[in-house]
Amino acid sequence: MNNKKWWKNYYAELNLTVGITLIFCAFYFFAPTLFTSKSSLISITGQIKKVETYYTQIITDNRFHKVKSTKSELQLQIIGQTHIYSLTKNIGYDYRNEKYENIKTALLNSKMVKVWIKKTQSEKWNPVIFQLENDDGTIIYDMNDAKSELYFLFPFMIILGLFSTSIFLRHRYPKKIKKIIGI
Image (cartoon, rainbow, N blue to C red; front, side):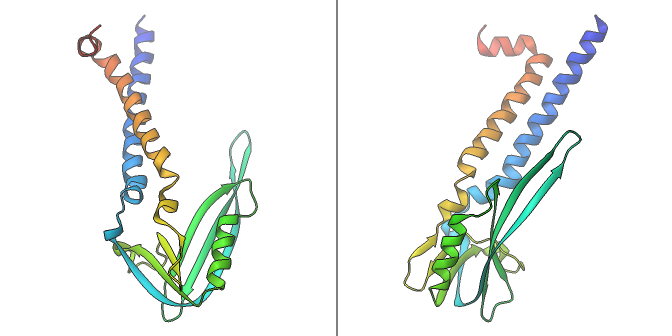
């Protein structure tokens, strides 16, 4: 009986660790991008020097199997700027990212570009693009495109973290939890 209690305590504490880690990761990695407002961005306008798309195959070797995926990256340079502005996305098993290829084509057909980045990343060598406009003011890449995957992922990680933490609380304080729930 004592051995069973030890395992219950171990898994309850493991759930607490996983829950706190999920909540921390959601706020640390996803919240800064998700809650970025238009007022926290600056625009840089200039003539396009170079636009390239790169595809890198990523292989994660696990003990049991290999997982392969492809990372696509669109890089943009502006004349007179030392920064390389980039968009990066894991496209899974696909070999081409049509969205980035369309952005590249639109940029090559344009002479000027307006790039929107975070003010805090203005001194960074490789800032992340939040919005792109071509010379006639057409928005090629929108802020909502940058945030699109995070609309689902952020709340999912928060809910999963809260659920995992609640398993620990249910194990540690069963009477108080039953009283709160009303059972």
